[in-house]
Amino acid sequence: MVQFSPWTQKNSSSAREFLARIICQQSTNPDCKIERKILLKGDPKVEIEYDNKEVTKLETSDMTVDDIVNIVKNRADEMEMSAQLKAAGLSGYTFTSTWKRDTKGKDFVGSAHKIPRQ
Image (cartoon, rainbow, N blue to C red; front, side, top):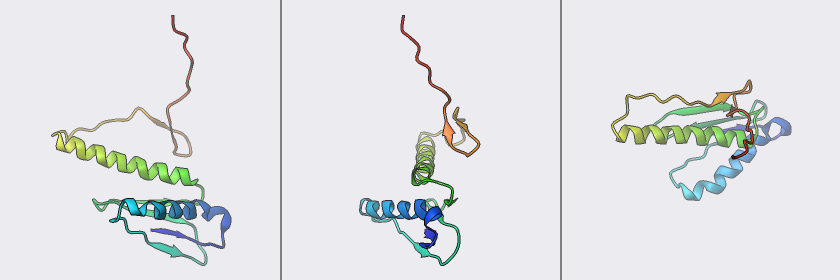
């Protein structure tokens, strides 16, 4: 579900762009159902329900469309990895990521340094 107010151009642009992107991709996944809510007022939101009924809710007013896409893709990748681990008989294991988060909740690795070969 994607909801936004077309009269609040500044903070609804990422939700509108995300909607445009998923509509373009819908032909690759015919099971994908897209619900749109156009509001007179209110903050833009994106809500994704996956096949396993898990729901990701995002308040998108301070996000870029790439932020939204990355969150959705990362969650889908995590669920796919969990399914693969379960199929391999490793469903009780927990894997901890070495990725860090900055103050805005975005993932980052750290800094990159060029080390000359000897």
